[in-house]
Length: 168
Image (cartoon, rainbow, N blue to C red; front, side, top):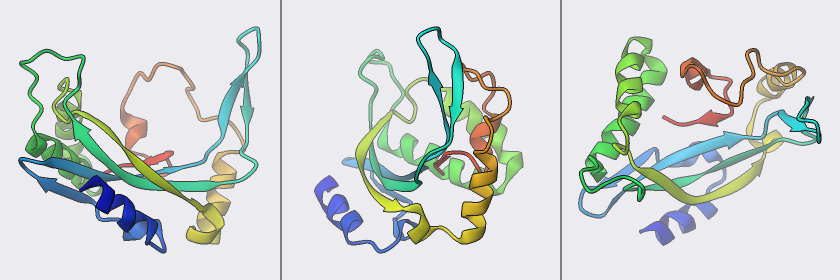
């Protein structure tokens, strides 16, 4: 099935054409994912961080197959249906902020949605994003995000429509 999804991905004209979610309960759950090249912190030998703006932008999109996390014990609650439900709730949570605390709870259950691995394809951002979006990204990337930390204190930023990952 993953080979078929990779072939389908390579035939797409735009990342918006990806199927959002595929679940075959006894075979697997595949979810679409999209990521955007954004600014980043570069660290020198002394550990000081410097904000860098990307020289070019890309959109990376593909499918991830969810699997049981190998580092968790046999009592792990992972099932393909659970992975599907967590992903589906995440997608609804994008549009319904009141649902986000419930989604954050399910995301926090160790191993419930499993780990995801898959293949992606890259598009030039200029080919798939509007000029207005590209201009907003340039403004956002002109300086580092507020509250930069290597450890995330909150999941609030994961819901930002301007975040680097588009899941759910």
